[in-house]
Length: 398
Ligand SMILES: [Ca+2]
Image (tube, rainbow, N blue to C red; front, side, top):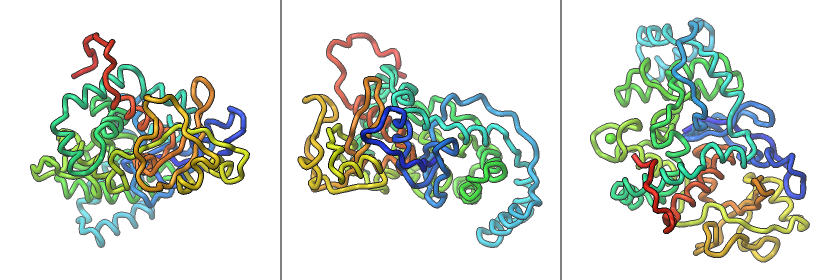
């Protein structure tokens, strides 16, 4: 899940020209990075995220084949000595075991390079093309149908809608089928600790969490593979998220995010539940917004960093938009949820949306606004009934 990038750019949106759109998309989540989570890392307007929050990492886009192992790392450097001391004194790892492990850590130059070029920095209408195609939608629907009994059970236990679980797994690893980079997680985290100054704190924390995870789950630290950010398994959980949120849904005694569908679906659901998911509630809805009103202008300018009670602005600056009967129409909205407003680019121009608490739950999985937008859009499309005219066999099912 996720590391990410955080977007520091508090983009100015609203009545500004299209140039700013990309910034807008980003300009929001002022939080952290990878956990089951992630968004873009240090390029351009993005800035490192607060490393205190476990977040999933960004989806592995155009992941390369397994990287050859790189060069040795100087583990006699003061920061490594301090790290190993902490692992020994605080967590009980034997010094000889730590020396054996870290002596085998390798610096992989691909890792800093990938942190510098997160896909999440693309304008939304370009970013979405990576993850939302007719094939992705068909695969998602097929996934829902194929796994209905298990997903029903997960949905019942955690109160998280199955289409959003499907959308996250599609975007992260195409349901576990897309390679996540093939990095040894231990090498990836050491490479970050060594070669990505803005992520050093994150990498240090995740190195500790990773070694604790391996001990808890009986994994070989020198064999576990994942993304350049250290995200693992079908749902791409970084180590801290794995330890905190993964569940043994199939009750076989271990939490397996590579091979157990129950553990994978249940862990994504548990992560979202623990971050405030509300079953059946909206994620984001299209609106029209009157940017001439100071309060609305402030909301449009600050993206997800600012919220306001829905009833305060509905009918007083914003109105529902969209096509009746199509996804994205307001249905039952319970209570008076806090919303944010966001303008993002589409192929036809731009879209203004009200973002609900469920959108912010997805943002904890990956702090890129583009990520949460693409998951919410894909979930909506997957949840739609199959078009009656589509009589062709589903080539994507498997
Ligand atoms: Ca299990």
